[in-house]
Image 1 (cartoon, rainbow, N blue to C red):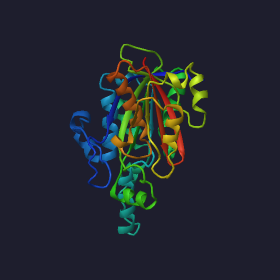
Image 2: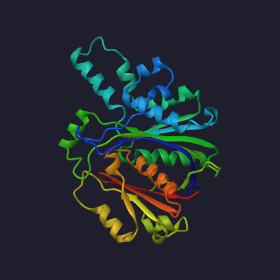
Image 3: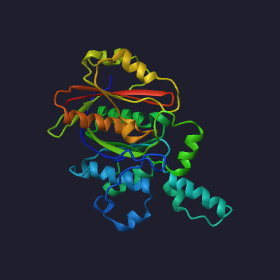
Image 4: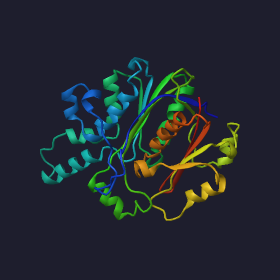
Length: 305
């Protein structure tokens, strides 16, 4: 069993309203000048790189950057706008005289690398691109790093939506249940509880039975005070609702993708929302975050520290 970790700080950039005038929910972005001071660096960053880096800097605003042992990021599709720009340049210029910047910034580890450079961090740096379980993989790795001796690990997720990717997803039937979305969330994890600890989390699981998972931490389904969940957008079944009705028929719940939209790392927003819910309602002790993306399912237990 992996030792539970503590969330000591967090930040989120997500849609600020339910406006989907473009066909999907777009993130409400902050003033990047306040979070990324270097104007030359800002100009070279694409929108999603700025979003991810700014979210990380916001998460680390009260933490000396030299104390960070590891930086772990997750993304489902990476820097889509830069990938599209590079591919369009490839076609327009007939594979000649291509500028390298869009290609360099289209790689999945761009955000993690930029965060490390801004922090002067030369420690462990990893990016996970595991489709609908990308953030769960990154979170699991972060908790293993803490088990191995790291004291502070920055872990986060980012994904963007573009008109092109939205059109492709629609053709594939990916938004039957939820509207598309985007966002970035970062969490500073620690191995020990501190005065700043916001929540205690257990490692994410996707294949185990819920009762077996909770029993491992001395809990049962009756101990869950609040459920944050949502269903997949590509399948037509109501599996998530059946899960709630079977195990948590009387438990208060919230469907988080109605706020952030559907994308590969949306569970990071669900985790952020769960920690926020703990601070809003002091009577809540345990929250279960349950997510489904396409055919991949996972859950994270969030408890009061």
